[in-house]
Image (cartoon, rainbow, N blue to C red; front, side):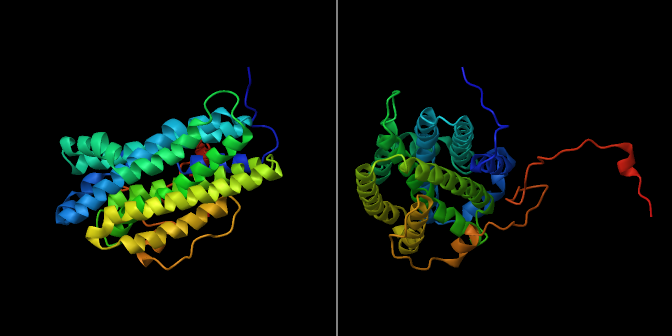
Length: 322
């Protein structure tokens, strides 16, 4: 039997726990019904790109919640780190449910069922990247997973959360930046902020684990990492064109994808790999983590924070003297 001790000397794990808690949210805090009028103004091509981008994200988040976080957590010996991974896994379930929250408001159930029960399973590029990532997770089944496999699972997780999600994030952020589908855009931005902190934490954990590898294992891990990155990027190019060619933004989305590919490498302690080009300033603005304005009585913006330091009110608190 083990008992987690949060009273030992603080380290970066405590900071990441607090940050994750401060960002906690659930999908029901957002009134997607406010997007209905905007949804009706979208062209068929725009609707198709939007709903398929979100369907793809649903599939990836489902695997991250069901496979990635639990299996990484299984072999994490530091109980505080294990708690952080557990919390992040819970938030991945919130993310996956959030897309259904959007679909429930905008689409008939038959269309949602088609997207999530059929299209996601059959879309070849989506299946390819999911299989690449999940195969590395599944190497952690059993008690004797090697440190090498544990490291590569973390690499795969960082690639998913800091790289592969972002072709899907782009379009809702793009529309919201134009004043369209703004509530859905807020949900996506909340998810993006979560994935950002997930990628940093897992990347730092991976860097620590890399120090446990032998020199030959490090060389092999680097080769495997860059091969995986190349494979995923080539697939992402095809996936992005399939989603966005009809709305004319595929090349800009790929600029954004490459930018995030380099961020994933930075999280893992490596230099940039892709040539970066400027992408739409609307998306750059969405990456700004400064507080957004929000209407407290309707949509909850990402300026919202949970009250973590609560003190009981006393009678003297209501005495105001000159």
